[in-house]
Image (cartoon, rainbow, N blue to C red; front, side, top):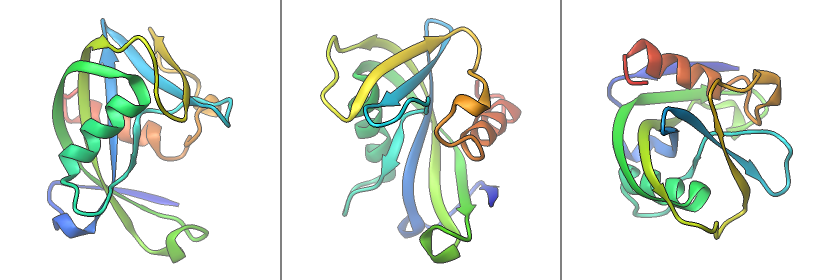
Length: 143
């Protein structure tokens, strides 16, 4: 598997939005109802949706964030031989500072976690991708 980073990508190629989030100085992670691992908020872009709108929708659906700032970080791609026919697939990476959460989640997410430190990568749903996204955001001075 290969993860690459870009400053510019044609909009029609973007399939995903992933949001690295913090709240009160803590890292924000989610746990899907069907998994026991942690993940950062994010998901698939819907037909006709602007990628920033995808990020806002996914952040709300997966964390219940209702008051936040959202900053674009960069674009990325993932190439995996066993996914997406082995083709390079593109997404947009965002960073959010969350000030307020809704009291109840209305999605497939079971629970939101706030961590002082990043969890061990073995406990992540996407351990070969999401740590690299956070590393790149840190490298760019975003979080």
